[in-house]
Image (cartoon, rainbow, N blue to C red; front, top):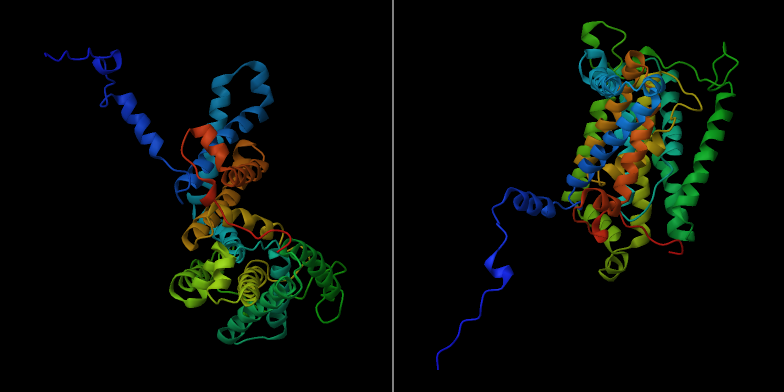
Length: 403
């Protein structure tokens, strides 16, 4: 019998062209994965820039009322250009960017190390304050020589932050107190403690009624990066190199030591780490001690490098901004460094943007918040950009409230 070939179906007779430009673009775009350590932060930054453009447009009420859409576009371009120009197109811009990056990077590492251990450190502010207390005391009680006094002050700041970081670690490991609650409360305690110290004769400045410490001796100040130019406005100091060194140490700790492997294992799966013979309680305490040390360094570099004295509010919002830095950097050493540099550049450039274009510096705060929102919500990125995502690997994992 003669076999009759089945007639081709419409789908078979008219196949889609796999080489068509639209199909190639679709296939490439579908392969983009927001779990990638570069793609998700990149899309988050791009999304924040786009929404920021709308915020700039809405802030120009006069041009909106006049229907001057080209003028609004000029305002957006000028604002973003001023932002970049203020951060990178002058020596003073670079100096201010480094100044802003230094404490953000150190405090970001303080958050990142606890993220890698499956913990949440919101106590960066308190740890910075205690680091500042220890560092400033060495700074104004000694008068040199600088090569001895400066390292002593830096180490004192590290030690002070470590002591304050140990408290939530011990409370978590020994009493089951959740680290979110303890670190927040310790921030308030540290702030009140610093205020009390600044009212004592040992710390308070005699010629000031407001709570401010004695000035750090010139010999106790961190050397300036551009000191050889004899330009006082260039405030960048060697604290930036301390932050880079801490970042390298963080990489070495995570990737080249047994302790780092145990911290990563604890953060990935605490039950498996315990089954493998690791000691979760000890790892929790050690992780918070390291985190406090990083934050203490941030406090030390601020008081003996940037400000030259201690106040109750010198840490500002750095401790909370550090959470955004660690999230954007995916808690990796390089990622955290790049995120801190980005935030530092935004802060430095935002001042220039406000002066030259009149766009409020609050735009920088909005962009930071949007970046964190998009990093924390990968499903939102999938919805906006139509790319792949995987909830299982998009961010740090934390233990439950009852653990």
